[in-house]
Image (spheres, rainbow, N blue to C red):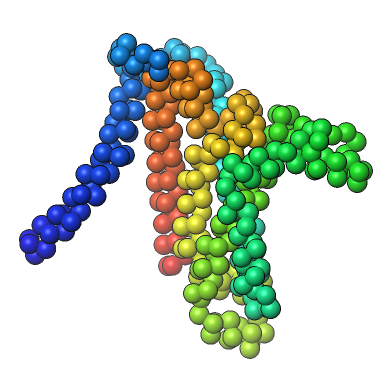
Length: 304
């Protein structure tokens, strides 16, 4: 037993060393910078400031003596924007993905062709799809505005990606268009593994299809569905490229990753940006743990 364990560690050692060099060292370096005041143009001149980047007067979480807390600052706004984007987009993608997967799970001619076509939006790189939608949503020359005006649905052209009233919902709509096929693919894989005898028995008994879906299909795919949701949620919480391409550094849509990029690249505040990056990592980690724990409790209750 000891020999097998020693052999296992021996085979794992190169991978662990590589991960420590590729991921561990940069992460540790970023955490260290978060406790310093460092400018990206002169890293050697950095000095230790403790938790000032987190809870100081000009820290991420603001002055603890202020009554309005940190939600009034840009970091608080970016957190709120990110969670709004993640919750709404993942919920819609799950619902639409489930519907698409149910349709693709049926037997019909050309099913393989339709499955392939559905994956096209997901296969397009995010930067490309964001730029494509940016042009179609342009307030002067965009196809979307022209169609809506010609159809009498709006009286004047709308700046979909610039107007704070529409910008976030526009980003969500584009993300739903792109990522729904990903959710549909994962859910379809789960549907393909379901036993057919349950459905044959329900059809013989004359059970309504909606009842079959709620009582048979949904409980059987709940586990894989939770896995798909957590994967998509973690991806949505670190969103950057889609929002940045469509709305740039707009305060109405800036995400946590966008905030980190702005502080590090635009402002050169490597210490402050590292504190935001470390906080982003912790927020995603805590969210994942809480979601997995809630999902495990829900699944165990359903099993009982």
